[in-house]
Length: 324
Image 1 (tube, helix red, strand yellow):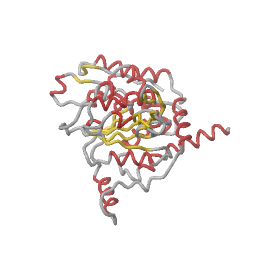
Image 2: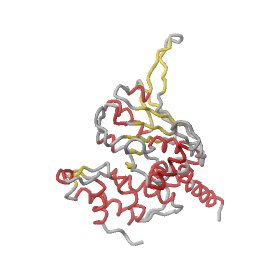
Image 3: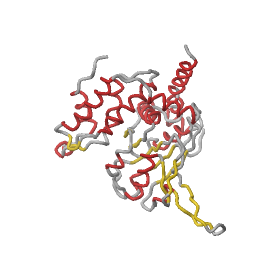
Image 4: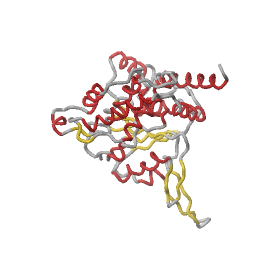
C-alpha cells in the first residue's frame, strides 16, 4: 500500500465515522444523517423539511461540531432584510470612508432557519453565495470561506406568514431531505437523554466530537469528486432524470442540474460507504432527495394526494439499471 493510498483510506475511514459522531446527539434516523453528510461531502446545500420539534436545528449544530469550521445561524423572519444576511457598507466617520461589515453568511456552515418565513427578496440574498461561493456588497465581490454549505429548514404544514421558495431557489439545493417522526425506540432514547438530570430542553451537542479539520474536509470533497464512475452509471442517472420529463404524472420534469446533483451525491455516498467507485444502488439511493424539489406533479395526481416521492419511485422502477 502506497503512502498516498494509505492517506486516502485513512480519510475515508474518518468520513465513515461522521454519522456515528452526529448520532450521539441526533438520535436515530440514520438515513437523514447520511443524506446531509452526503451533501456536505459533495459540496452541496440541503433543504431540511419537517414539522417542528424533530431536531432539524439540533442536526445542523451536530454537523457543525464534526469539523473545525465556523458556524452561523440566521433566523429568517418576515422583517429580515437582505443586508442582514450578506452584510452591508458602514460609514466610518474617522476615516471618512465606507467599510464592509460582513454578515453571518461568511461562515463554513450556515443554518438558514425557517427560510420560508422571509420574503422572496431576502431569500434571494442567498442565491449568489449558494451558487458562486461569493457575496457582492456595494459592487465588491468577496468570497466566503471554503468549504461552504447552507442548510435551510422549513415547516411543510405551517402556511401563515410564510413565503414559498421560488423554483430558482429550490434548484440551488443539492438535496431536499425530509425528516419524519422517529420510531418508538429512537424516541424513547431521545426523551431519556434530554430529560435525564438536565434542566430545560436546550440543544445539547456536547457528545459530538470533531472528526475532521477544515483542510481534511476539503480533501474529502476532492476525493468525492475524483471517485470512479462507470459511464453506464452516469447514463443511468441521466436516463432517470429524462424519464421525469416523459412521465404522465409529472407536469414539469427535472433539468440537467438534476442529473448533475444525482451524480455528485452518488459519488459522496460511495465514499461514505468506504468505496472508491459508484454503483447503481448509489444512484437509486440519492435520486429521490435529489429530484423531489425539482419536479411539479400533474394536477390530477395532486388532487389524489400523491407525493413527488410516490411518482419518483415509479420513475426509478421504470428505468432499467446497468449491470455491474
